[in-house]
Image (cartoon, rainbow, N blue to C red; front, side, top):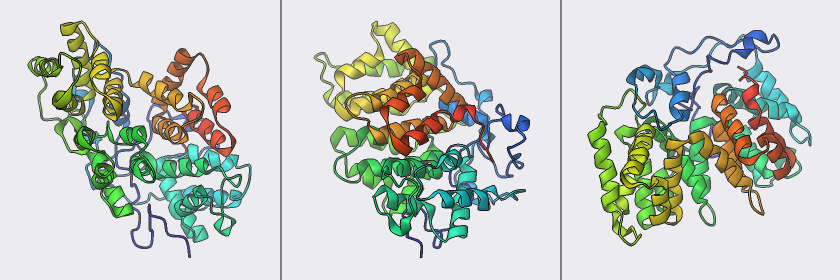
Length: 430
């Protein structure tokens, strides 16, 4: 009998076809498979609504100082999947057996091997929907839960001699698990991993929660509750205290600003922009100690859209002659400061923020493996954004990201991270 795994008990809770509501079926601007005879043509898009390229634009839109107004026509509401719609999706009729037998069979053959480029290629060159089909196909072919096996191996257990990375590199298995879970459920995986065990990985938790839409937050909460038997809120609140707990409550709660652009009902005009800027200015204490007034800044930064935050940053600097980022760094401390800067930097320059975060995970005396894999995997879901991050990384740090990965990490984990970093030049395979 296959080992049970908290992420998916297929016997008790059959997985819906697409457990990652909101992932684009494919990027219509990257149809490289049309000119590549060795790649199977994708089937028609499913009938149920899914995110399209606009979702990618919303999550990776670069907010410059000259563009702060939302354009409702640019983000059609129908492009966004409503909560619960994913459950209606059914597996498409495949004209081939890649997801059902070929990929699961390849993974099975290469378990226990020291060299597994084919497995790495499958993990990094398939859509999230296809990878979910691989999970189902693997259990059908082998009788084993692939995610359970990866979890066992990440703990160092060699049960049944099943291990993708027999050299003992647990990080490969953790990263592979996150990729199989997809762009939404993996955030629940990272959030729980950040708070379980000794100590809290504060940035891993921050990056899993902030910047999510209402629909994504609901999907993450559902995933955590169904797989771990405990709510996301309970996990987070039990590990934080005082002001930081209140900040993360704001990050996890539903709010109109977290609706997809084009569906937001609240009008945000120049008067409201000015009001937010004045709230920040009036809450700033004379002696650089924010104390109880920090709630005003937290409220503005966590309950405004990226476009609105970028406009607030520009207006604040015009009013005061100082950068809003400098204010946050000066009057907020610890985990709260890091979380607020993560939100603000993502609104002003997301490409630059993500490039710096990837380097930060490798800088210093030891690589922060969990942060590195979470950040790089998160970026790689949108190939266009990944390509932009790699260009900015080279501009900032005078070397290519792939070259840095080769120097900073080792073994199968290095091979997987390099393949993830290079996935922008290899089209998703259906």
